[in-house]
Image (cartoon, rainbow, N blue to C red; front, side):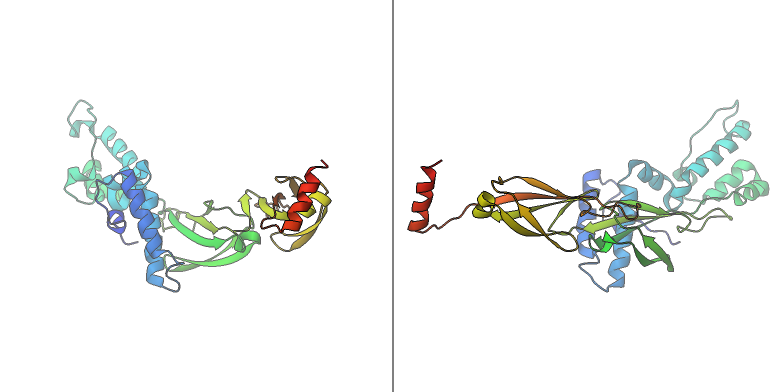
Length: 303
């Protein structure tokens, strides 16, 4: 996998702070978002790189490893462990009397870490020991743009990751911002090590008719004053169809009713659904005629 300079991807300096990283990410994400650039493969690739760069640089721990080890940052823990083993085995060669010294890539003038391990472990045997060490492959982060309608039912998607097509099944009910792991579909391992994992984060565009909270849906329904006072019926939208409801006489504005099982699918629980909560808003008539106003005046004197 070719090395990607995450700072160049986000068009920022290496001294950028958290706020600058966030600002740069939002600006570029809007510019290269697939919805803004439909059928543009280059924009799609750029968008994926932007998300990957933000994933690393916005995490202080990951950023520290990236700044220290560059393209080898995901193997940082293994490098550190190897350094410790080498130092403990060769204490006399590193300052005598068992002194322990910290090193970073800059201490070696940019040379490959394998050269460092070679000198640390001792010639060809050191290289052999390093080359036989198995490293886990790099994790891959991807963002998938969907709508509430898309994730109301389970669906199959084909993703292209590292020029390979991967068929996945997305369970119904995934939420905005949720990340799922596809084990073993990340980067190739080193020296026969296991593959990394694929992490998919979902950006869900909401259905503007409803507010979604988990598997429950919330909406508002306007009813006229006469229906609220005298009672009647009203037809409301659910996510999939329309339902006719009976409105009780004397219904107040703000009254809530629950439609059981008319919400969103519960994630990974087939056949289970949340509820739909409807809040009534009573519409007060305006622009009354003189006759209508007079009737309201008469009515007010009787209550």
